Length: 160
Image 1 (cartoon, one colour):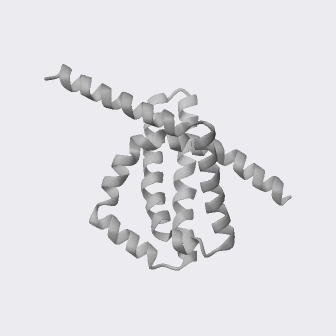
Image 2 (cartoon, one colour):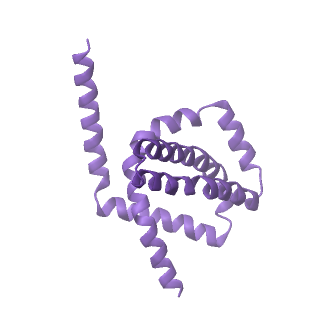
């Protein structure tokens, strides 16, 4: 049963990791800017000072509220409201990354003290590394970065 649940967990997570890896270069600069804000540093210090169970609740609340919004956005897109659905999806995705990533990074050390949570974190990290290696995503992302850089240069020359 444990092996089957572990396989199911990996099967569900792999496409999400793939999506995250492909979208990450787009939102990384924004995350870095937000993380550099003094208010974010204060928030991270506050989170890090909480107990491990409080940190779990702080992670669960955004997951329980933001993640369903992504599903609603996809339903809207499929239901004939592509603009509203796309905007909702992008906002939910951004909020998810900003809020959940900050809480996770601030509380990761304490979360790793729970054996089951350490298993989840390490399994996701291993799975991410395997997906990236198997699909050669590092090469793909490097090529996309070069293409974006070239495109920016060409646009800059065009608008001089």
